[in-house]
Amino acid sequence: MRVVVLAGGTGGTKLAHGFAQLPDVELAVVANVGDDAEFHGLLVCPDIDALLYTLSGLIDAERGWGVAGDTHTAHDMFARFGEETWFTVGDADLATHAYRTRLLREGASLTDATAAMAAALGISARILPASDERWRTRIRTDAGELAFQDWFVRLRTEPAAIGVSHDGPGIAAPAALEAVANADLVVIGPSNPIVSIGPILALAGMATAVAARPVIAVSPIIAGEALKGPAARMMESLGHGSGAVAVARYYHALDAGLVDRFVLDEADAALAPDIADLGMAPAVLPTIMRTDADRATLARTLVGSDP
Image (cartoon, rainbow, N blue to C red; front, side):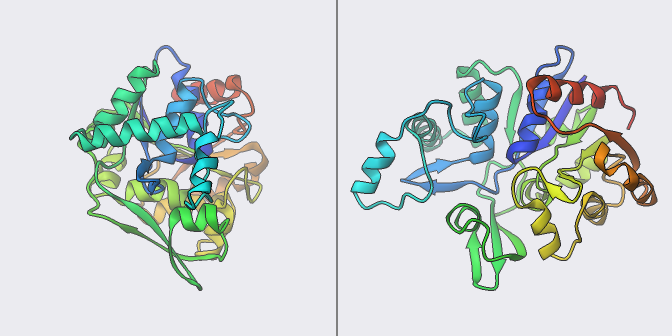
């Protein structure tokens, strides 16, 4: 079965790992690139890197990002040189960024560079950047407009977001569009709908391509709260409301036919009728993925469901 997962952040990466554990699934993951930024002259792709490290078993599971056991000698040296060091880059992580940047400077697309890195790390799933072009998320606040990493890491999501935009040509990577067009099932992971999934669907032709396939979306918000990250607070500050139903409404507003089945956690079972009112078939499942087995179980259940 050809499955495409739209992913960004911790939740989407965990679910992608669940599908990667299923031997009868041919997996492609379309990764958000709206979080990308340049640090120390190198291109950093946090969502792509989280997938590379998770699917290769290198991830620092406690933090949810970076390489387990990484050291920070280079980071400390950058500080001595007076470089900004609010964005922490480990030594192994630095090698990832340096290798990617060299491939791009030699003429590789981000898709091709990512494929080379995945192959070197022994990953069989396809990790596909949503765009090969610059496509950066910008956060509008009462204090002005900020680059995503400035707002998310340096300022720790303060002040509150009051608007979101994207900087770049908005061209979807051909490989990502092709994977979606050929998918038997598209899964919108339990990622922040505004800044992880939104930038993917905002690319030209992507939402239309996704809506043409069977689509299951998994809520990243459980009992009114995101397990990690600012998704719940962002939804509310941007006027979309709170809770899992607000996520479903957000996707419905993008395209009424985008999502066929919407997955709620068991804690939100009472919200199923509200999901059905939006024209989506509700599914109530245990969605908290504490272990690798939890991830695989949820993925297996989604593959077996009928969107």
